Length: 361
Image (cartoon, rainbow, N blue to C red; front, side, top):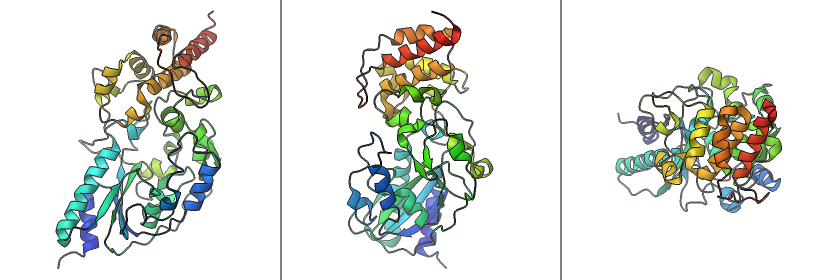
């Protein structure tokens, strides 16, 4: 007997490399009100694209007319991989490209299976879709206190994507339980105290926001908290008991394996100091070649140089004075809502910190 369409669709999604698959009926988003309140409170910072399309975000049927169902998928990016100066999700290829290609392949498979040009669209962290809301509705997990979706068999080190379809599919049961219990490890571990309350993140204090989305200067009072993190932060996921037990290693040939630019000549991962020095010395052409197809391009070279200077201020030594001094000649300004400071200001700050630490003039 042939598989029911829903079962066959899930099997194909797993065959394409997704780690979780669920089906949801589209409609009003339960968390739209909370999301709007979060934006209105100013917690989105400079992410001015988030307030747009509020009406469409409030109902998952609206962004793409005619759709009624969604195939919601998750793809692990290797929570068992060692921590480092670049968050695990950003070390390899851009997840948007990887997952959209696979969701489009799933869409093509479905059209062939039902012999009909079923309308639909793939969304991966794009468009006015509240992906976590849709994923919970599809049974993939619950909202952790660190705001990430947590799955009881996978933890939270995964990407979410959705294929919305003009096709009625039998939905899965939503995930109703909250399995965080009384645990507050993620809230307590945040280096910059970015959590206002459980499940409420002030992005303007979050290291991921500061090193990726923040376009201007990183506030000086938060720089020490950045520590050795050049791009993104995994701390609130690292300490989660569900990740300690269920996070997975990357499979062979994973598109999320670290790219060469993050490795030494012998293939080992660069330390934060080594990577910071490499980035500060890069030209734009070198950066474009080394990070082609990488999510790290979102911060642009000037943003990564800013981050690198902060990292060397936190973990650097006297051996880093030379590269920071050369960075003082960087004339590319950082657009900023907070100040008109240039990237070189962060290098000057780092030099001052190093001099104070080492007691030199």
